[in-house]
Length: 158
Image (cartoon, rainbow, N blue to C red; front, side):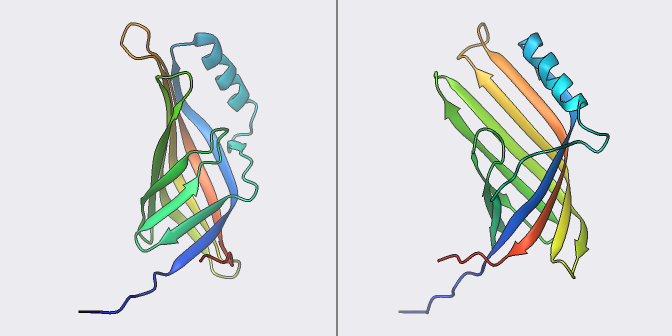
């Protein structure tokens, strides 16, 4: 029988800003590690603003998705509640075998009903691995404090 079809409600949010503050870094390549640490020390005490032009987070039901605002636009997806967002994803890189993983774990910190903005805080972890065995594996992992501001967007979704 036909039970009808409910239309899912999609809600788009523009990523107004993303600030990252480096908390922990480890890497096989010590020169690269030092360069990253110096780059993030140059930011202010609240962290470093990341470019997020035209970045969107899309929510439907209990799931959210977005492209990572990192230099590698990785599709990220995960569960969400009214007060928590978990996003994750990875991409295989060339030369193989290499991959980059990214994860966000965010909690709602504040809501501004007047501007329709929400501020989310938590962690962002980026892991990059190159090589296929323990002998030649090159690994880098960066853990950041993250603050993301989202604003409801009128983006048409079909």
